[in-house]
Image (cartoon, rainbow, N blue to C red):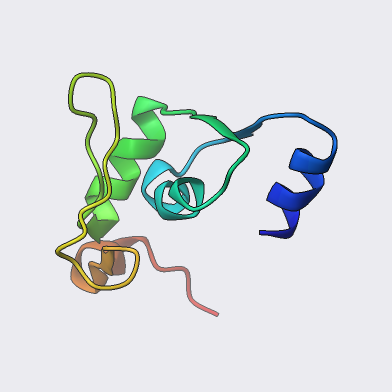
Length: 86
């Protein structure tokens, strides 16, 4: 929200970069939003690790308002093979 206020105060527009499912809800809530970049490789990873990851419909992303919060649920079992020991 602070970024939106800063961008708006300069009469500019904001573009979100990557992680479309993560950025979709915040972009819907700001005045200075222009576009949300959608890269297939980033979206592929979102779908691999998160239930509720968004998919474009006729080139537009829509939030799933039927899901709680940001609509994402981490798929722990699917991510487990990629876990790095700490």
